[in-house]
Image (cartoon, rainbow, N blue to C red; front, side, top):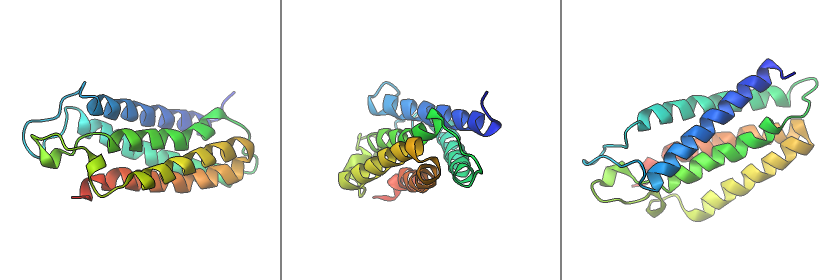
Length: 159
């Protein structure tokens, strides 16, 4: 039987993964960008808002689990930080609406591949620790999720 906290964690995970898939489809040009500068892809605002709430929920749940009396095991806790990173990576590979109609990717902006790789490595470490040492791992996962969310939402500022 899963706890309510774990059920919420599954919901946050699903929302992060859905947003990551959406961003990947944009990066692959399966979902077209707008025509004018500043026009994002259709549905972009919805997925961005869902992802923002999912990040906030995942961060709060990881903090709560890190301080729980008996954190227990669970695959969902190990998957949260990598799911957040998957969203960041997919978003980093998408196009910057500021430069439309040209398709300039965020990869060409100020956020460099080394930073993305560091965040990715940290998300994997958090996942492993969440699985083996739940308190330490989820505490680290909450920090990694904060960094991941901030990086994902500051991508447009790198002009």
